[in-house]
Image (tube, rainbow, N blue to C red):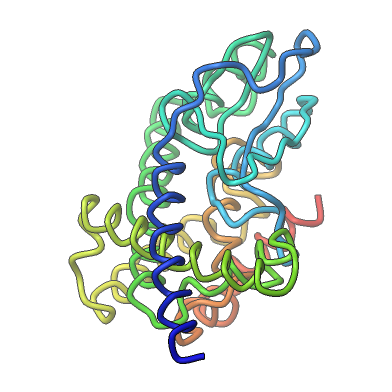
Length: 276
């Protein structure tokens, strides 16, 4: 029994390295070969219970597709299928692969004639771009860095409310949870450090995120949507990056409380988009 425990740990470490190599594997070939014309195939991580996906960028794309009325089919990447750029989510449309959520939206906006989802005023366009960068390059990375620094911050993806129900049962499930936990922590910590946010203390990260949420709340004000009376691309982006703070436990629950209590207009916005 005493030999079995370290042996399982060694096996887990080896398999963790294998999983990390899979994460770096590119998939240049089409995943959906029998595709339908003008139909979008969204390849992303498996579904979660508390919200459709753990990834803010996946939530952003799904929300944008629904707002734009673009037909799409969700495809589970099974944790092993990635775009030629190594990114998830990505889409396939008319036999070609498109990666990066912003490039995807820009491409499909022209392909399907959905230009009315963007502001026409140059100043409003600038503001939308600035808040997109705030959410995607600052707020979410502060949150990811906080999760990677917290003891149980990355527990959700492997839980049954996250991806755990896709892992089978028994020893297989326990081993996959162990492997994914180690691999995800190493991956997110490395990327957060490279981005810069991972180099800050938890107190500094919380301060950054609080200021971001304050700015976002102030900009939304009493409007139902960031775009005004109807949802726009910016609303899809904001939902993608705010929803995980509401529906996925945050370290110490600090940011969840801020978004639902301190700035209730943000929590109400998330619920409003979710109901649509």
